[in-house]
Image (tube, rainbow, N blue to C red; front, top):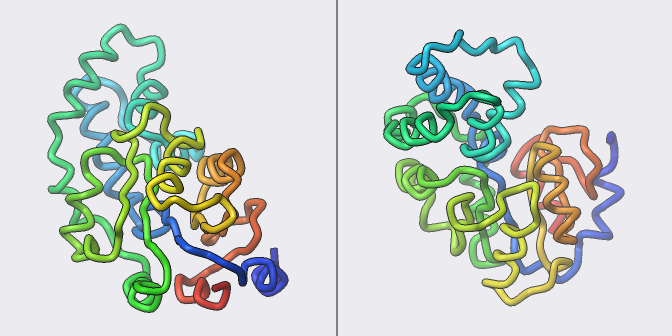
Length: 217
């Protein structure tokens, strides 16, 4: 991946109309908040605490939508409908203080606003709008596509395709900045060029800082 961002510059410098961001792991370090949320759920239903050393479970709860995470954590459990109903009663706003905005995000959004459309494409559902408002970021994004606004969340391409449809642009006119294989798979399926944020996934470029994105536009 070393040097990939530089090698991709000529490819990316074209008629980009929109930059689309994943939320968790890209805009925010939300690991502790997401873990705390699901710890509440498993504790309520008498299951053992989640092991933060279980890398596969941590990956699932950080990248998939709530419905799929709960199906994973409660696989084969007849109480799944009850579990989902309980999880919907948890006020995620109480966990916002555990979330950290990624360094350079706001400065990058300031630089991009007015140059391109800015969108969010996340597997969060009802908490996303409140999260943007809480951190004073809602004014930047003209489209916020969540798992609650599609029939098929990421890694299905539907969320990204809906963003493209809203802007009336082609897939090649957007960039999707993500940090997981779920993001990459969605981008590939939608035909949207993928920029990996601090990840070693296949992508047209990798960035380690948000401000690095500016050199690609």
